[in-house]
Image (cartoon, rainbow, N blue to C red):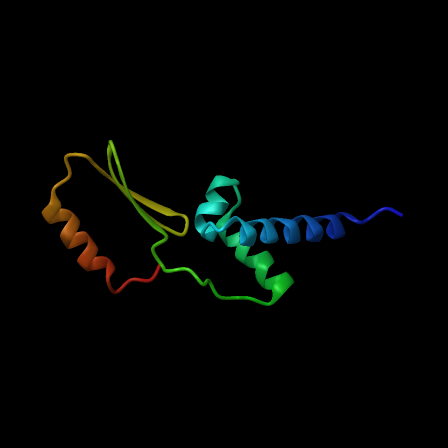
Length: 101
């Protein structure tokens, strides 16, 4: 007996969510590595397992790269070049304190 396309999609998402859980990686990192849209992951997780909230912090990753600093929040990425003005970064971060991603 053949499965419908929606049954196949449900099974595929169950497997993706289980792989992420077993990976030990954060959801944001796993989604980026597996080219999965972060918001789709949470949509399917909520639909299949009833979880509607993100267990992760708002800022998923801050990394220092050779070309500067990158700050990632969900699907937003902010990059500062290597020679950025630290005063401007400080003012920028102070502005973000009251804003949710």
